Image 1 (cartoon, one colour):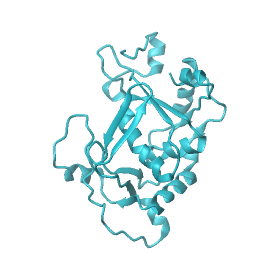
Image 2 (cartoon, rainbow, N blue to C red; image 1 turned 30 degrees about the vertical axis):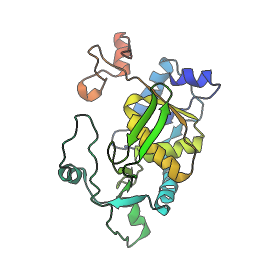
Image 3 (cartoon, rainbow, N blue to C red; image 1 turned 45 degrees about the vertical axis):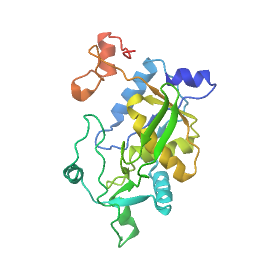
Image 4 (cartoon, rainbow, N blue to C red; image 1 turned 180 degrees about the vertical axis):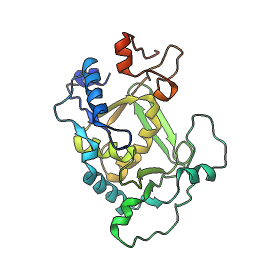
Length: 241
């Protein structure tokens, strides 16, 4: 889908290696990814962007957010957040961060200490974040209700997905993002980052997810086969639509 839309618009297709989770990303996985995508017929621009090689750029973008006062350090662990959330939420819906560290005053003895803590984006509670998706049409998410203060920097010294993809979209001059419909809420978060940075956001096209024969999303944790296993077995992959 991404390649079709890029070609139809006279544009270019870029491959980005999102390898910021160092525990899970290995070189052999990247090589397998490139091989599988080439097998599927995708052709991308020669220069492949590797996120783990761009930490200085992400730090620069994070500092721009910090200078604008829209992010704050957060000492909460995942366990802390889970225990602090009391209100029940619909299954599959995001559990909203309760704002435990929003108003805390934190001072760092040395500047480098700031890179070793989590940082969250303070969302404008109650504001409706709207955009038009190329496939699904008008979309709207309410900050503070549909999603809460989200991570932009992790205490392991790496940016979150939300910050990294926005920073790279800006650097690469991306005009359209094509990705799965499970990331619709992420688009709303990212639009807030584009706005604070004063950068024009690309357009978005969210594709249907690849489903199994039972209509469930393919996922390794659910025992689903990867593309490579499917190739070996000669199976076809359908979108469910």
